Amino acid sequence: EVSRIPQLDRDQEIKFCMGIELLWRRLKSARRAAGFSQEDVESYPGTANPDFLSCPAGSRLLCHGCATDGISHELADRLRDRHREFETARNEIMARHLFLVFSLLNRYRSVNVSEEDLIQEANLSLFKAVRGFDFSRGVRFRTYAGYWVNQAFLNAIYNQSRVVRVPAYIQKAMKKVNDALGFNGDPNASEEELADKSGITTELLRSATKGNRFTISLD
Image 1: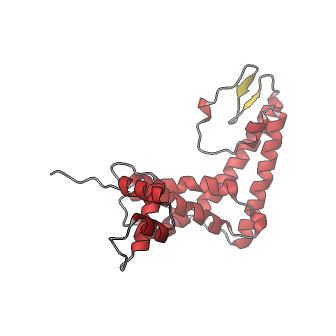
Image 2: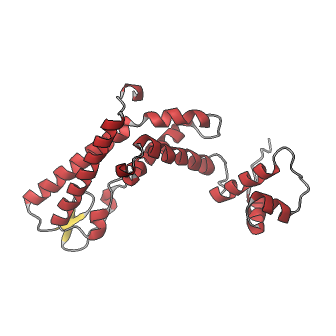
Image 3: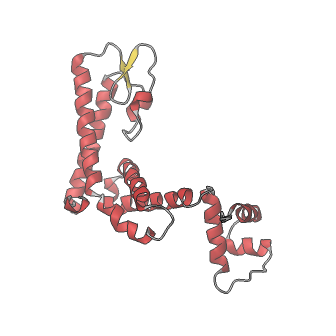
């Protein structure tokens, strides 16, 4: 299904991102007119369920924010239209770049996390990519989104690959230690020497050594 979605060339990508920026400004303008607070105006539509948002007295839930209770039908319809057109454009550019998830997935196929979980985490990371992308910097969206996709893969591996979760910073510290040891490292090196070679503190080395444990079957 993803392979049948047409990709964007560089010119199309720039025009698409410029359009999304324009729609985002139009949406914020409609939110201000509807009486949204400044926090709600700047709130980027994402994956959160707006039904859990509680509005203060004198306002009501409308399009992921709290609008003035006495808002006119014209302003409410305008806000809905602006919200709908923005989400449609955002979802389309995400769909046009779903191929990145599968192209980058190949390097993570031998980990202890199911491919379905990795794909879902990477799909969610595209929301962050759309939100943080700035087309005026001259970088392609696929380049910027690829960073977020890789980060989603790594975070999923760090958090889901073990039966007992080990914090990501502990696993990253152990990776530095293992890289420092390499093939010719001295396994009898002191903690101070090993920490110095790894570029981490001695306290972090001790925490990583204690926390980096695996479960062993008793069967």
